[in-house]
Image (tube, rainbow, N blue to C red; front, side, top):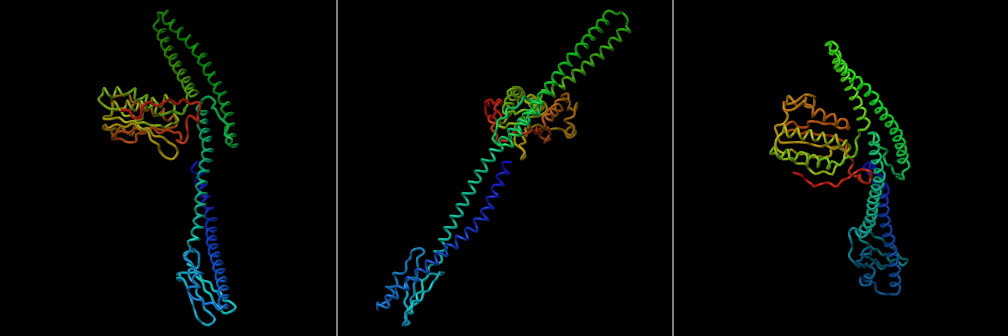
Length: 437
């Protein structure tokens, strides 16, 4: 939105400059030319009257007399020519080329011609047109600055709303929404607060139901298990013991199903993405794995980053641990963990690469399938990592086979947003170190 507002404002300013600046510049040039012509006409009329008086008084009119009517100053007449009634002609000054000229005839028959250098008029008009252009440039710069401020003023609360909506959708507590002064944005914030209250009430009811269901189901199942075990210990009949064992297996299976259903319910109710400082996760993984790489005679490089993204902190840490461990066991050389932006939608890519032989061609298409392994693992780590990334709205890919490069794509937070200002209740810790080896 910020870029679009800037583009719209600049486009409007350019159109205004074209529609107003060009006609104004042309009018200014014509005004300067008209003023020059009127000034020349006035000077010519004045010179004609003065020379007529001198001629009637019998004074001599020559080049010396005419030189007082010309000057080398900008805009002044450069040349004058006089034809007297007796047919004699006199002139003074240097005739410019090109020139603007004007002539005047007196009642006694004296004809006076005066000329002004055309370039003097052109330079004067250019100065005025340049002033118009300078004003247009100042207007454009001021408009861009005002549009940038306005776009920042509107975009910041919208990003804050997006972050708050992300937290509400993930089941977090009610976000702290502050009034922005923009009526439409405040209306959306109020509705988001009401939606958060309704969602919080529903989540509380569902959590209570899960807790009650856990208690109501576990108690009779535990009692049933104890009763069956007691029957198994007190009976001497093999058939009864076989039936008891079969019943215990069914009860244990039922307990497992209940635990799985309740576990999924709790994860769905309690999990959720939040704003995560990627540098903190990187530092945690470096401290955890650096010693293992050193014992293996290899190096682990975690590049510094100031990126912030939407993710589940525990899930992201587990995904990175899986990829780093996979590189330690199956890769070679230096393992590098880095992050970079991708595209115009604030997407963030976390890459884990090494210098080993890479992933075999027959294994690469199925590397994220369960129980698919090269023989030195169970084949569950990458499948689970992909599920965790998908749950956070991202994706995990093998972006390069040789050497192996695994890429995690997640939604980042725009860099124009100050995390401490936009989400005051977030925890921002001081980063430790810059580049780690």
